[in-house]
Each structure stands twice: as C-alpha cells, then as structure tokens.
Image (tube, rainbow, N blue to C red; front, side, top):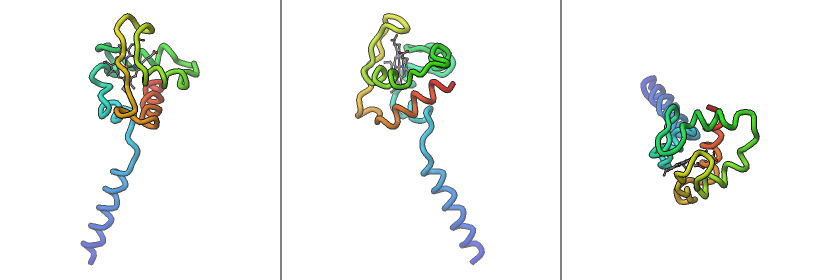
Amino acid sequence: MKTLNLLLVASAALLSVGAQAATGEEIMTKSGCMACHKVDAKLVGPALKDIAKKYKGQDVLAKMLPKVRAGGPGVWGPIPMSPNPIEKISDADLKTAVQWILSL
Ligand code: HEC
C-alpha cells in the first residue's frame, strides 16, 4: 500500500510538470523560430538578446506581435523574416514567445 501511494504521488508530480505552460524558448523551438534566431548570436535573424536591448523600456508588444506574424525586412537589415502564420504558432504562443524575447 505504501508503495502504491508513493507511485500515485510520483505520477501526479509528473503529470503536473507535463501540464505546465511551455516557456518562450520551448515555443520558439517547436515553432521553428530557432532556425533563424539564437539567444546570444545573430543567425539569419538578430540575436534575441539584441532585440531585447533595442526595445528595452519601450512598450512594443502590441506592435511586435503583428510584425512577427507578417514577417518582413527593414528593422535589422534587408533580410526579411518569413511570415509566421497561425498554423505555425498560435496567438497565445506568439505572445508568450515575444514577451520572453523582450525579457531577455
Ligand atoms: C526565416 C528566418 C526567420 C524565422 C523562421 C523567424 N525569424 Fe524572426 N527575424 C528574422 C529576421 C531576418 C529578422 C529581422 C527583420 C527586420 O530586419 O525587420 C527577424 C526579426 C524578429 C524580431 C524583431 C522584429 C523587429 O521589428 O525588431 C522578433 C521579435 C522575431 N524575429 C521573432 C521571431 C519569432 C517569435 C519567430 C517564430 C514564430 C521568428 N522570429 C521566426 C528571421 C526569422
């Protein structure tokens, strides 16, 4: 009985870990963003830390969400970001990801 209780507690703990919301980094990995972005270094797109630095102290989230959705060039140079449609990343995940980037 004691073993069974322990097993139940252990599986409940595992379940709650599984149910936790994904972090910005997990979302960006799963949504393919990390093919072009790295946290510390420029790849195809700017380093995520450089994005955070550029917009530090500015309230840019509302502007940034449609920009990342639509993609496009011009802010960091001539290379465009490809569009990131809803099939690739949900509104909620996009918001978590961009909030995470801006917090770096
Ligand atoms: C095909 C490569 C590519 C992919 C995939 C990509 N990006 Fe980008 N990203 C770029 C490039 C290039 C830029 C710079 C665009 C510019 O100069 O305006 C950029 C810029 C950004 C910026 C800064 C925009 C600004 O206006 O300063 C954010 C935030 C960002 N990306 C987030 C994301 C997220 C989140 C994803 C995944 C949903 C993603 N990117 C996927 C290439 C990519």
